[in-house]
Amino acid sequence: MKNQTKKGFTIVEVLFVLAIGGLILMMVFYAMPAINRWNNNNKRKADVSAILQAVSDYRLQNSGSFPIATNSLTLPTLSIYKATNITIKSPTTSGLNPDPSQVTDSTIIFVYNNALCDTTTPGKFTAGGSRDIVALYALEPNMSQCRQL
Image (cartoon, rainbow, N blue to C red; front, side, top):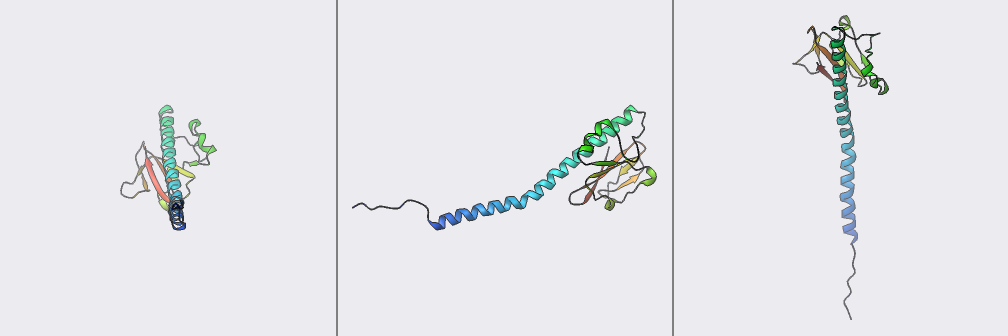
């Protein structure tokens, strides 16, 4: 008579594999919000760079004038941002508000003329710089940033 051995996995081995799979899934679901936040922040930084470059190009083509129309920038190259729910505000120098705590909405980018980013405090800027353009915007989670061109 032959000695027959049963082939297959024991219940302990199956439970062990399921537990490892569950841990991997839990780590992925835990990391997804952080990955999405990182992607959104990188997209926002790229948008701000494109906006500042468009404003700079406009100023070069129009004798240094700043594109202001009813407190919102209107440039042909920025029409894509209307479709992506980004509002670009351009306050005048008299309405300059350097308080970064006021910039918490990640769908609004404030563009200022004749301003400089404060190098000592992230997200702050000051009036000055006769030809400098500054963008003040919010990243997730509610971190204001200043970018100067």
